[in-house]
Amino acid sequence: MSDTYLTTYPRARVYHVCEWCRRVIRPRERYERQVALVDGGAWTYKTCAHCSAYLTVMHRWHLLNPDEAFIPDEYDY
Image: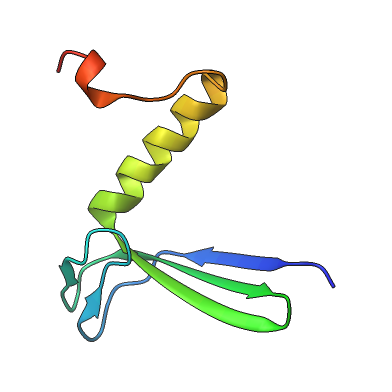
């Protein structure tokens, strides 16, 4: 059986909790919603816009630098 993933960016109608930082996602706030059907089970992940942006940047960085580990203390901000 193949895995199925769906990502949407809805506007919250009720309060949710971000899976990554545990911040409250308030009504009318946009968030990333991922649905996964894996090995016969269904999973839903909700990620706040802040963490979604961070994870997107980290994913792109890793694609460009697959052999390097990202260590934030090594970079000047």
